[in-house]
Length: 527
Image (tube, rainbow, N blue to C red; front, side, top):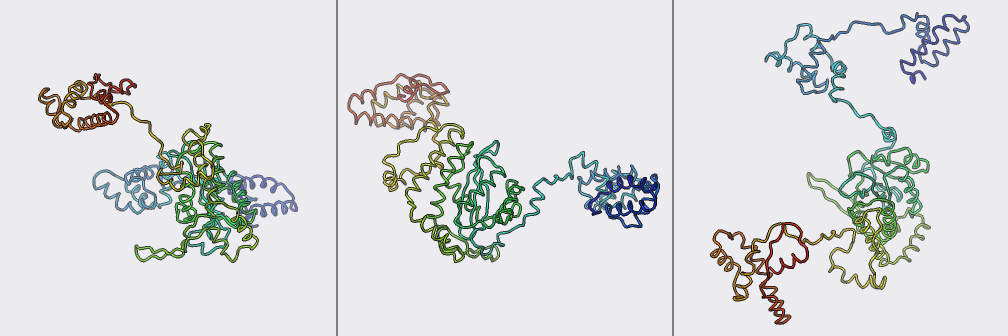
């Protein structure tokens, strides 16, 4: 028990009991001594000596310091000259650094000061440099947080430690839906992947919080077709806290953690972060309860589609030969099929899985996923707390969706969460039109001689306006001639009236350097 008391506490206790011990009768002194020995942990003879000593002599005996201010000043100087290295490295450097500084005239030490400096231990150097390091911000370590004690109590599990566990041991991770910035509050996804079968569950969280993680684990435990036996997490404080770890231990679930900054320790769930979450949701920023609710609807359909209709590879063995790594995989199979093939799964659980599988329609699940992705994409585009615009008409429901699958590839990306946002068309010029003043002349030349090329037109312009239209404008004039020829071809198709309108000289107006209105754009197109 005495080991739990600090030296300051023992000194206070000694000061309180010494007066009582000196003035008490012999039987009472024995009781005081027994109490003091039991509380302080001192040997009985040592406790008697301490209680008998007068109060003036109980303090620490003073002694003159070995290293005075001169030795400390010399130490600070050589520490700065060494670029503020630690005491152990500085101790090894002193026999080299001090003679070098003296040789070049940078240091002149008294014989006694030099001897004390060279004899100084590394621990003494660190103690004497504590004030200098504190003011310079050097050597100050971060205080361990509240989660440090929790983290130390959770066993570390690496990738090689898994072996072949039964279903129920799941790797767990959080995926941020923050977009390009981690500032502010945004939605998260809690991902759990079973190591044995690849069964994956996703739960949306409106914010990153340990209490919400516990509630999500309770929900996942109810949805799983097998008992949850253990979770393997990273060192995120959202997992390494008393709420999550305490809930796991109270419910017979073994908590383990990966090594810090070793993402390969959680390779199973890291693979699902990209293959499931990012494939479904993308990388846009999602905020607010509305976005978390839409994610919940999306994952409700996706969990069935992924676990029952999406085969995945599972690593069977890995061998390293020098710099070459060879991997061998099991045949692709769905998590549902892997669960049914497990001999250690409860037959009742297998029967429930087969009954559930018989009721699932993969096309209906895929249609629900696409619909949820449309709503999630609209929320990402309009802000998580904004009301999304009304959904477009979906034709004749599931039949229309099925009919569209045959030609969906022609439209490119079908997942709304992965489509690039359309940029508004550019309707203004950033530079003035170099041919604005001669566009009438050019159109007249083209009308008279339709076979003229852009090089011929530029040569004529250079002949009539020397030094005004350099050769670097050829590419611009070629694009302009292509537009005029397109107008002429359009006029030939749609009749003489269109042809006359197309070949009629247009009035040119200078173009401002900013966005133009519709009338100005019409003039530019005619030019």
